[in-house]
Image 1 (cartoon, rainbow, N blue to C red):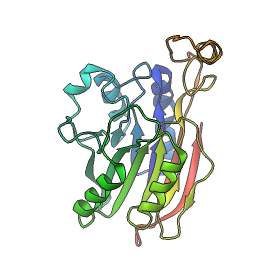
Image 2: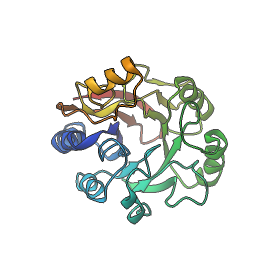
Image 3: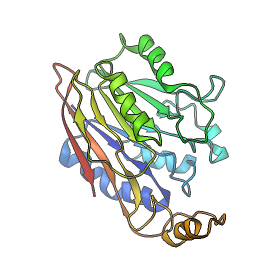
Length: 256
């Protein structure tokens, strides 16, 4: 089995890039299951219902979110749909779900979305204790478990990888929008990569307009960010799994 995780969709051009290249990636690589982080799709902050439906029309199986989950108010109209999950360590009374179990080719695949706490502006529960409780609940119900850890700090992501080694199939990071070259299979069998990158404008500062970003850093003035209008790239990772052992045997980074 092959599972594709696609990095944060940033803006309209990011979604357009997904539309252009995802079908070809699925076909040429014989992808069975697709996870896409969509929390930056709507002008860099949030997700609209139309964009969400456009993703599902591309055979995306799960859309994960992050710190901009509530960026667009219309999210409340579809956040309870089975194919979208938001960080599981948001407060318990938040709408939506932080994880779910999906079926594909006879396998039950658990997908969990978490958000980091280091250098993030979101008040959230401890992702380490929250994910432990979730795993206690679903480990007997699943064949594979994938974690989208939406976090800023490299150290927090790496620690999560080791914390979950042997407990889940794969841990991949999102949020920082820069694809890292540290893909590995940890000693107890869990696949790990610090960040799978973004699907958004090539000439940009993590998706945002270059001139605006420089001005903010140069002057410290509160210039409003805007998504770059440059042509986009697609970042992601393919996890190939041995159907007999349910372990990842290879990790391939995608940059198109």
